[in-house]
Amino acid sequence: MLTVSTNVRFNFFVNSISENRKIKEKQIAISFDDGPVENTLEILKVLEKYNAQAGFFCIGKNIKKHPGIFKEIIEKGHFVGNHTYSHTRKMGALSVSTIVREIEACNKIAEETAGITMKLFRPPFGIVSPKTQKALQETGMQSIGWSIRSFDAVLSSEEIVLERIKKRLRPGAVILLHDNNAKTVNILEQLLLFLKNNQYEVVRPDKLLEINAYS
Image (cartoon, rainbow, N blue to C red; front, side):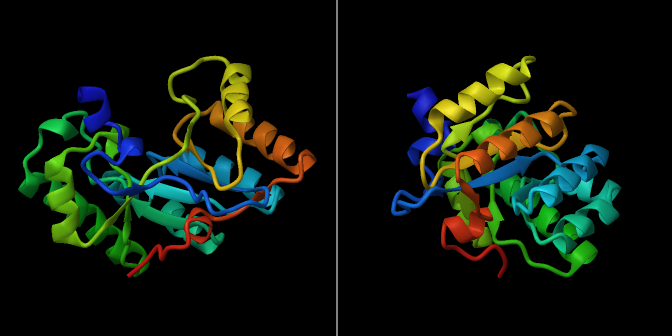
């Protein structure tokens, strides 16, 4: 029960959108968690090189620390989403009111920094509960998951990470990467090259999932 109830992909407590199974063309989306950080700039360069747009689920305290990078993500044509303010590992133990505060604080700094109202939320570590669902209802946010977890933040081998993604590729998939991980820059470049060579189109996640990123 614990595995199911705390994994955002299973839609057990929270209705998360993790892929678009209606898509039959070779289209996929790439999303990043945990920025913005200095390394995000390198990620943005690679995306621009391959003319690819992505989604960035940002931590509020990192937006506050790197407002210029946050604005550059948006200026480059990518979308930004809410990844809570502090990205606490205690997400599963938080009260509804604390989760609401985490979401609202992240939204507030994003609005102050870039003048946008974020609508899409990704729970830290994919941990969800009935309390998460109540907090999302209170804040009017939509939870976004993923269908391909790369484990780029866990696995040391770039080759293994790439193979994980390649084996799971299918139309309508959403890939999870982390822009705060230095080796993800090379993983991303190798992935985009592979996608290009195999006639896959990289579509911005909100477009792929047919939802609005902002209110």
